[in-house]
Length: 219
Figure 1 (cartoon, rainbow, N blue to C red):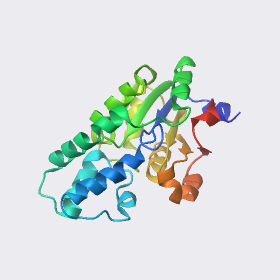
Figure 2: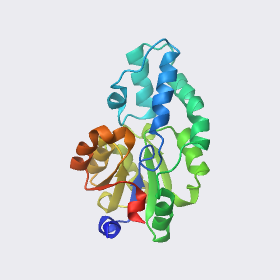
Figure 3: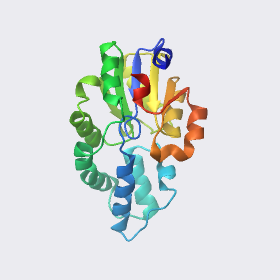
Figure 4: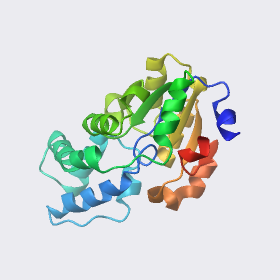
């Protein structure tokens, strides 16, 4: 069975959030369109590719520099948090099978973590609202480490906090930058299909050790 093969020799399972555990990438295109529209700007088609893997802080810096915004990076992040908060609390669904898989892992004694490029505020409200609090041992954001994905920092931090060697960690990711982060941390990586990264599915397959459609493949 695929699940047994993936988890053989593993002690911890680390999840990206947006596009991996949660079907939430659609929110950010809408927010980017609205946010840039306030300045009379249109959304560049390559924007998502340009910011792939960046932390919330790195993305705010990119926006400020690229679009010549007057607001500080902290002000930009506050605006994004305000625009997205209710959506993360009330609207984003988990990927099919995600919650059942997380709690199955806990029942089997695996350590679990969420390793996200998103903001702490949005992830905390999403985890609580989706009933994942008791299923996740640790949450770390890319703003809390030196560099965002594809640097391995965020996954190495999670392994350290969970007291599990990197080689004993399995990572689930939806974008190439995240897959590279997990691989560079010395971990096994499973790619998760997602509509918003479908354009680079072949690259995801090439970079990862496994691929699943969603978590129902594992329960």
